[in-house]
Amino acid sequence: MTDLNNFFKSAFTVDNVIFGFDEADLKVLLIKRGEEPYKDTWALPGYFVYPNENLDEAAGRVLEELTGLRNVFLEQVKTFGAVNRHPFGRVITVAYFSLVKINAYNVQAASIASDAEWHSVSDVKDLPFDHMEILQACFNRLKWSIRTRPVGFELLPPKFTLTELQHLYEAILETPLEKRNFRKKILSMNLLIDLEESQEGVAHRPARLYQFDPEKYRQFLSEGFIFELKETKKRDNRRKLQEV
Amino acid sequence: MTDLNNFFKSAFTVDNVIFGFDEADLKVLLIKRGEEPYKDTWALPGYFVYPNENLDEAAGRVLEELTGLRNVFLEQVKTFGAVNRHPFGRVITVAYFSLVKINAYNVQAASIASDAEWHSVSDVKDLPFDHMEILQACFNRLKWSIRTRPVGFELLPPKFTLTELQHLYEAILETPLEKRNFRKKILSMNLLIDLEESQEGVAHRPARLYQFDPEKYRQFLSEGFIFELKETKKRDNRRKLQEV
DNA sequence: TCAAAAGTGTTCTTATTACACCCATGG
DNA sequence: CCATGGGTGTAATAAGAACACTTTTGA
Image (tube, rainbow over all chains, first blue to last red; front, side, top):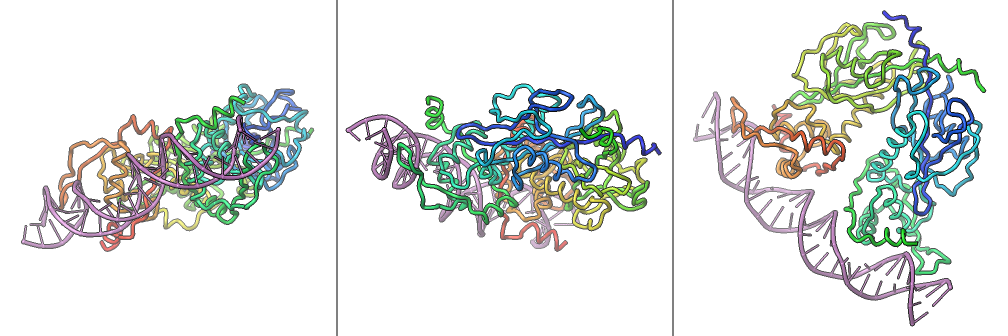
């Protein structure tokens, strides 16, 4: 048998793709790395997993150092382990994605970073290591998740309008949706609670505010659902957004 | 900064949940471990990842040693890294699931095992390490996959009948389906090619044989689909199976 | 009173569900 | 000629797609 000691020479990290939604745009939180390799480069936040730490704990730690948030949506996506992915030796990384309410806190450069900043997902073109691949995998997972589980709510404030929810779906799915049909579909799921409150201070008819039903939320999170809606031909909302 | 050397003391393995389908039952391939820890216990096949080996390669190697098969369906599911999951030190494991045609080869006990055997998934109650948790995660993934991608074909022989396909769905989803509706749904997807051949030597009307369309297969594998069908009230096929 | 966005009615079409029934084969 | 699955027809209902229209607010 091979000497076991040969195997106990590798390390592993977690990398965290933190998504946020900002009115019209899907964002990802990047850090300017404070350590070699790739010091001072924008990259995904991540760090080595400590010897006494579980994977989920490590991912939560990285997230908390950066955002101050605990107990946010955090889910393992995929592990990347190409032989030469890290210049310091054999390092595999477990990728997580998390969803945060972008206004709920201030980003702080953590010990691992000299700076931290939200970037539009569509603008990110270049990242060190295999981080582009990781980002892509997490974005794909998010796209799939939003069609099958009520995760969209994690990106929105506690009270939101149907239009905000629709814009979120459109941003993530990268496709325009028809307003009437979107509303019918989402309301028929009984996932939303009508708060019987309205927006204030908008220069048009104020929209009704909704909350998600936590019980239905839990049920759908474990059972899954299917949210399928054909891309609309009328580019009604889309065009207006772009014309602003 | 923490001394990096502290981190390069861990190891990682792959574990492989190999599913097969045998007429009426979903099976998983277990090995009798040939090495400590848990020597001579039934467990999931797995092994350390070699220093010069990618993760997917390692999973493929474990699979090939055991089944002699290359190029079968193999997909990463989740990584398990609880601090004390392995008695020899910090070992995280990357779980894969694979789908094989159960009659396509003979199982051979590989170097890592003293024996290898198919077990009904529903009968597996007790496995070492966190292997029960891994099996459960992979089974859940399979359940989800069969509803969203054409992976069912990986478990069937190249030519199959619609009833065989339906039984496969019923076994994985653990629910009876209505024959007429199952057929309509699956045929409307244009995923099957009617071979215009029939079964031979059966004591009833011979069933037509089908093949999947490799082009449609590829398309659906990347795009995904939704296969939703309500559980039937009439337990037509089910009852008969159980009464035999 | 006008712009802007919220919100609703409705028709047409397609998909799903739930059954009942007929067909081909070997023993 | 009958037991055993294989295979189809179809009506009722539900869901989806596509549009046009009305409502409410601030400026």
